[in-house]
Amino acid sequence: MKESTKNKRIAIITGASSGIGYTFALALDRILHTTDELWLIARNEERLRELSGQLTMKTRIIPMDLTKSESFVFFEELLKKELPSVRFLINAAGLGFMGEFLDVEQRCEEETIMCNCIGLTRMTRMCLPYMAWNGRIIQLASSAAFLPQPDFAVYAASKAYVLSLSTALSEELRGRGIYVTSVCPGPVATPFFDKAEVFGKQLAIKKYVTVTPERVVLQALKDSRRRKRMSVCGIPMKAFYLLTKLVPERFILFCMRIMKVSR
Image 1 (spheres, rainbow, N blue to C red):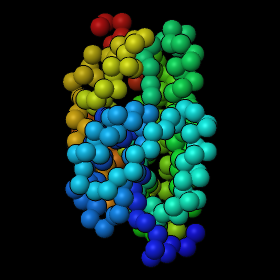
Image 2 (image 1 turned 120 degrees about the vertical axis):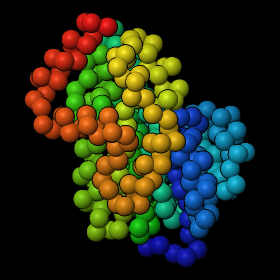
Image 3 (image 1 turned 180 degrees about the vertical axis):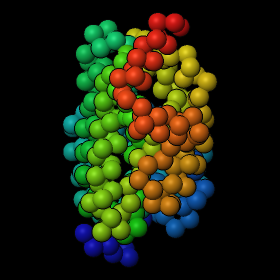
């Protein structure tokens, strides 16, 4: 789709009602001086309105559940009607539940796949025809994507999908002047774990490498600006990524099993 000077220039953030998506909204509000509107997407409309009241940019609030197919019918019609020029797409919505595979409710695991994989894919596919030259796509993956995660199996598998998809898209879209960055943080101090730990708990060691969402977002925007394919925040997670490339997977999983038994 050819970009017209009359097209409204927008940035889109999913999962904007809390956590990393919320922090991205605050950050973009400070730096996007030539963007006309910020589209905020999440299930919680009240939280989106609270966020909108804190921003100086013009916003559009879009209550939307990425686990529901019918939500995308409305969003696709909105794009066709508005014909925006999308400068940023930030897929920050995500779900995950800790616990052994059979202990986590099937409904929860299916919602994780719907949100993290299918919802993210649909959102990306719908927005791509409207992406501007030099546009940026930021996809929230996770350091869990580097290695299968016992007791977090479906979440880790879903984030491995995000990382793989985003890396492939980065190569495909380069010729269109669109740059894709996968954000792969470790544990982040957000409300995510309030829900994730319903069926199980994270390894205690992960609590010692937890970072703030502000650090993750700052690093992600910096890496996106540099057109990097992956953004990893903090020395511990960068070391973990290197470890997964150098050390056999079976040995790392063995060490994780030992830590689980000894906690």
